Image (tube, rainbow, N blue to C red; front, side, top):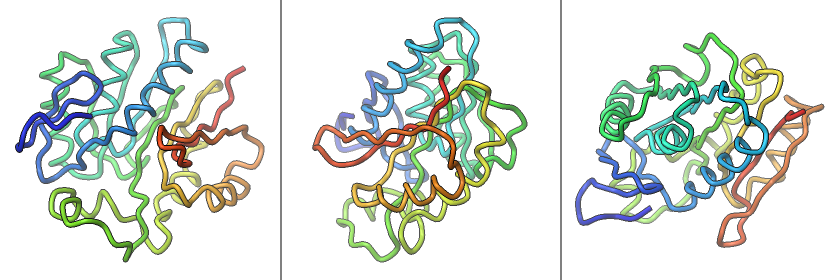
Length: 214
């Protein structure tokens, strides 16, 4: 992700995005999440028909990137706020992608099952000290996730199994110190499903992939 200038324009995965005060600025490490999703999809969904859901799309960065790589896919991007949906739709239209945008609090407004579900949920613990630039430019609702940062992850894991196709992958980004607690959540909510953790380019625990691919 490259900041083009001192403005609201960013490059994410070779796509120029307009990012306003209502959405989280896309980060470089999230491009690695897109890379991983691309590799998994190409390996396991060689057929043309498959579906992708992004929860908490913000600027639309992840959904738009995947739509450009896989134009044949059915892609839905959601956010809890209309202002974020409007931002994502503008970016998606400018990029020439076909994405269905929906206002939804997690899965509240979702009525189908998906092969790929990807989310970069708020995961910073309440009270954690962030630098002024982040606090000034990113909406707090997109940053902070409760006492240990995982409030939305509890709700996500509790609901997600109702929206998974027979073959699926869930791709999530999380904080470097949350791996142990996420393992506990998986034991509670998804005890029989395979998963892998992956480090980011800085060798920090960052991504979680939950899957049934066969």
